[in-house]
Structure formats: C-alpha cells, structure tokens
Image 1 (cartoon, rainbow, N blue to C red):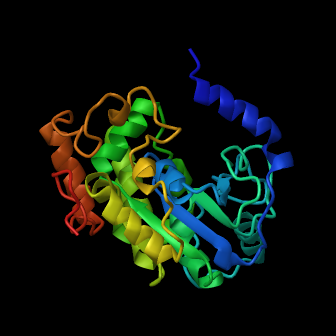
Image 2 (cartoon, one colour):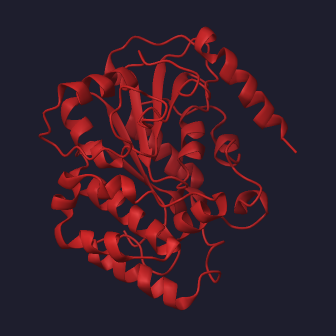
Length: 300
C-alpha cells in the first residue's frame, strides 16, 4: 500500500520542473551534500532545507537520469581535465539542469539557495572542489556495516561493476583493488563499495569541506546541526529541533527510526562475527579503521 508521502512525491514530480525557480547561478549559493547511498543524505538534505529556502537537485550524477553525465560513480581526481565532464557538473551545480528526476524533491517555490544531494559523486568530490572552489561541500559518513545492511534491506546491488570498468580508478587504488575482483559475498561487496567511495573522497576532500558523521547527528542532533549551519554560513532555522527529529521522506518501513529503534546501533548484533571481522579487515586495507571500527560510533 502506498503511503501518502509517496503519492505526494509522485504528483510533485509531474509539476516540479514547471513550478520551481532556480536561484542565481553563482555557485556560492550551492551546497553539494555527498555521501554513500543509505548513509542518511536525504535526512541531512531535509535538515539543511528545513526553512524550505533551497532548490533541491536530486541525484544529478546518475547517468540514467542525466544524459550529459558520462558515467555513474565517475572517478575524477583533482587535476582531471575534461571539458565535457566539467560542463555536465556545472549545469548540475548551478541548477541549469532540470528534469522530473532531479526536481522531484523540491519544496521551495522561490528558493534563495541550491542543495545538490548526491550519493554517486564521492569519487569526484575533490575534483569538483578544485574546479568550483566557491562550492560549499558537505560530506556525510555513516558506519559501513549500517550502510551495507540498509542497502541489502532495500534490495540494492553492490554496483562494483561501475568501479571495475574504470581503469584510472583501479590504477589509483593499486593493490587495494584486488578484493573488488575476488569478493563473492554480497554484503562484503557493499562494504567494499563503501570503502572505495569513502577512501577516495577523504583522500581528495577539499580543505573547506564540512564532514558530518551520521551517528553524532543522531546522538547530539542540535549541536551537530548548529555546527553544520555555521560551516555553511547559513542561518539556523527556527524549527531546528523539529527538523532533526523528523524521519526523512525516504525512510522505509524497515528503517530503525520508523520501528522505534536507535538508528545508530540497530544493526549491532545482527551481523555475524566472521562478517564483521572480514569487513574490518577491508577497512584496515583502505585506511578507514581510524574512522570506524566494530562499534557503532565513529572513532574520529
């Protein structure tokens, strides 16, 4: 049975492109919110847009819905010289891109700012920061075991083929690419995708980017949200406390927050020890064991 918010979203997709205005195209009005899929990006996007003053551009770096973006999860390290890629990125970031997909989540008719939400842009974050230095970048991280479990509950595939098809990415990863070829367990493949997306992002993340940890936003929501708005040089919305306590519109029936469970550690105890150990070995391989370990909270 469809929930009312799903029906409203479908109806909005039909009219969004006609109703929503684009703020001036200078990129200091744009926030790029990036993170792995199922890390809470929609929730954080709704928090940033709590005052409904941002035009939301939803997942423009998915080649299925943006014919100008050449490859989903495109690897573009700083120094990449690609005019076609740059033009495609700019139209997503300045809002000249408009279609039913990217405009589906707008709630502002006359927005002052833009918010680009992207779960497939981690491998190009450093390049975007270099090419568009006025861009405000927010990078969201969530524990890889929580992310992998949520992806499997959603029925998502690990999409490692998108990584293996990019020779430049494999060369950058070096020996770390070996598990991408040999790992057969679907859950651990999701962990590997998380490792690649986050290791590359952290290696290239611009100095001015603001990193948010999902777990801290859950446990200290007001303080973390205030720090986020300060980093964005945006006023704190009057409804901040309500906004941080509201589940995202993309929360599914199995989501911990809708089941009354703690979203930070709802996965703990539900993944066997051997799988946790194998996942931790991959985090160590990618140098991410300093960020997350077998416990739910980040180590940073």
